[in-house]
Picture: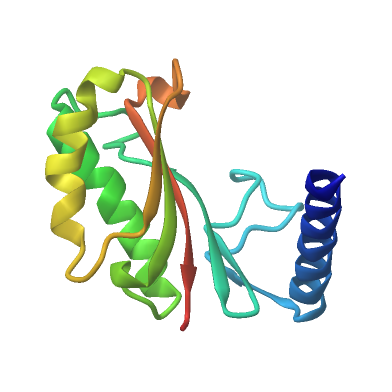
Length: 147
């Protein structure tokens, strides 16, 4: 019974947080509109003090580079560019998800990833994803905070 009450209380808290966030309005970073012919998503969306970053790839001319380390650098540069366009730094990331087509690339990705932070690392998941768009090895998305 106690476990059930905790789950119900947790769901109530999550619903309350979601309604509080949606009530604060939204600002778009690198926005795209439904009438645009381009990709059907914006680079990031502010909701209150949280910045939700779309998944990004590390491509050159629409294709991943032949070197996995260079692709990791490009994907992190893409993420960094969106974060900086929102007025934040990489150290403002609080959560990151890395999707990887081959988890054997974990160490290669980490060797690049760690160079993008000066403080504590954000919470992170590194997920084996299977094939990614355009033959990419990595896709990264995240959440950052103004505070």
